[in-house]
Image (cartoon, rainbow, N blue to C red; front, side):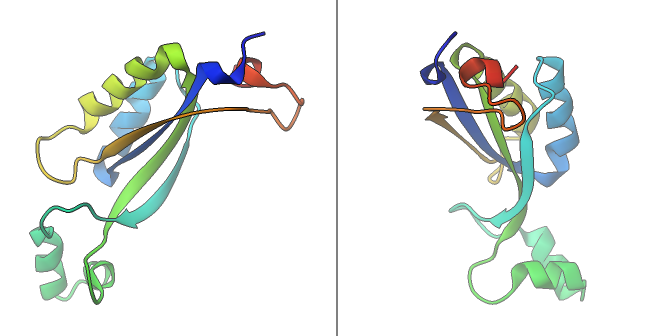
Length: 130
């Protein structure tokens, strides 16, 4: 049985409008299972002027996203745990779909995984990922 130190957690922050394509790309490389959630955030880049324009036009959703203070933008947060040997393949797929060359394309973080356990069966390590 292979140990958990042979796994990594990939956390990716991507644009919401690229989520369906990202899901498809991950499935095509053999990763149909992962977690995702809606998040709000910002990098150090400039303000999204389309969102600002929407707020100025009176659109409630745009106004609520701008709020007072630093502007936050809707993103998707993906959490994927894979064997280390698949790490580069997953990262390439995420970049291929989400890279536009514009600020706001996102970030990818890679962390070591020390343990994993499937709750239903109690299986551990790489077996719990299969």
